[in-house]
Length: 220
Ligand SMILES: [Zn+2]
Image (cartoon, rainbow, N blue to C red):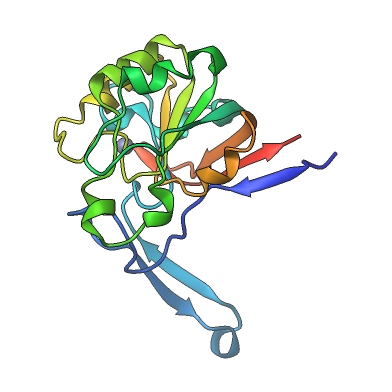
């Protein structure tokens, strides 16, 4: 069997590319050249929350699971994308924005929030600081809906100015194995249909609060 379509939702991770303001720029350095060394190889250096990545509950709550202890099965499942492209810079995603989609969301879904910020990925004020995050009422609504995970095409799930990361904490205070995907892209390509299969598989780094992932949606 072969999936009918596979859509890559992963941002390009490049040396000196976009990262969270204040975090170091990602580094990708050549450590072997085929003609000279007999192989190509690179050394990389970036935080575990660079580019498209998954947050584990340990990112925000003590004693909760790290990325390596979440079983692979929680990262694969059915999901849907919500069209939130009416959000303007500096606005947040709240209960009233999400309530519109209530009838489409099922328990255990992986819910992807399409804000339209994916294609804006750059060193601009709009992308780095004014992206629409989920506000605390929105986060409570998502927890109450019983979803398994949430993903977004902005730098973070909280708006930039929430330095307490309130929505992260509300989301992680729900189910023990909840995860958040951030820095997604191409979510616009999923809007043509409601439901997709999603695979968002992070690197298995011992004790880490998160890790980079290749995230795809597919139709079977
Ligand atoms: Zn996060």
